[in-house]
Image (tube, rainbow, N blue to C red):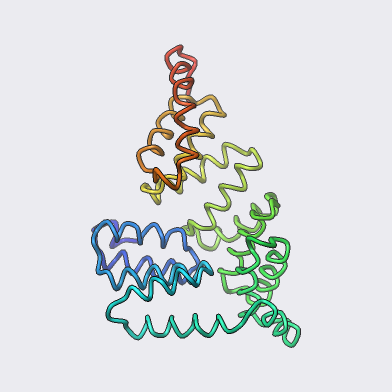
Length: 269
C-alpha cells in the first residue's frame, strides 16, 4: 500500500498488491487492480496469469483456463495453476460430498462446495462455508465465502454480523466490504450502507457500482445534490453494455432529480 501511495502507476507494486489480494480472498480488489494494470498496458502474460488466478479464486475455472491459454510463454506458476485446475475438474460435487462422508473436516472439499453451491443453492453453500470456517478458523477465505453465501440467501442480518467480524481482522478486504454494504442496503440501514459504499469508492475510484448505490442512497435520503453527483460519476464509469439497464434507470431519474435541485428542495447533511 505504501508503494502505491508513492507511485500509483508502479506496475510491480500493483501486481504485488493484486496477488496479495487474491491470496487473502479479496477478489474484488484484485479485479480492480487488474483493470488498472490493463489501462497501464502491463505485460500481457503477467496480466493473463493474474486474471487466471482471480477467475480460479472465484470458482470460474473455464475463464481461468481461457486466460491461461492466452499466455504465450507460460511460467512455472502458470503451469502449476493449470495443473491445479485440471485436478479440481476431475472432482465433481458428488465426489466432493463423498469425500466429506469419509472426512467431515476436509477443508478443501468444504471450501470448494462453499463456492460451487453459492449461486445455485445458497442454503447448502451456507452450511459448507460455515463448516469450512469452523474447521479452519485461520483461513479468512472461508469466512468471506460464508458472508457472501448469507447475502446470496438474503439472510442479511446474519451476513452483517459475519462480515463485520471479517473486516475487524482484514479492514481493507473490499470483497467483504462490498457484501457488507449490500446487506446493509437491503436492510434499509442507509447511513451505514452509505459509509461502506463511500469507503469502497475511495478505495476503488474507477469502479462504477459503488457510485450507483451511493446515488440511490443519497436519493432516498433526500440528499439530492450528492445523489446527482454520484449518479453522474456512475454514468461516466459504467460499461454501456453490461450496465445498460442501470444506466437507463439513472437517465430516467435525472430530470426529476434536477427539478428537485432547482426548486431548492435538494438538501445535504
